Length: 139
Image (cartoon, rainbow, N blue to C red):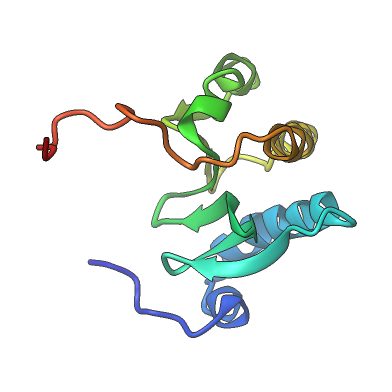
């Protein structure tokens, strides 16, 4: 069942339960610290907090058994091994953090800093052509 729609980022955080709150609020703190002086702003996209500068740069997500920080798939592909070596699941474009795991603060800071550098260097596309498979495409 999809999460109820929220009006803004503050409402999203207000609705977190006691298990979710520490993880997702820490990801928010790390995200806000990483955006300082960059022009990247916290906004609501797809019912989740996102960090954007004209277009989405990364987003936070919250689910029943985990939260994640999601990046463009092409960007995160270069960081999957580091996330897995630290003991975290690295899914397509995202670092997945179970509720029973600590937030890997150093790793998250590095990912945010690298993504901002990547974005400022011109990598602004959230997805790349051919990224998604299995769907029908119009010619």
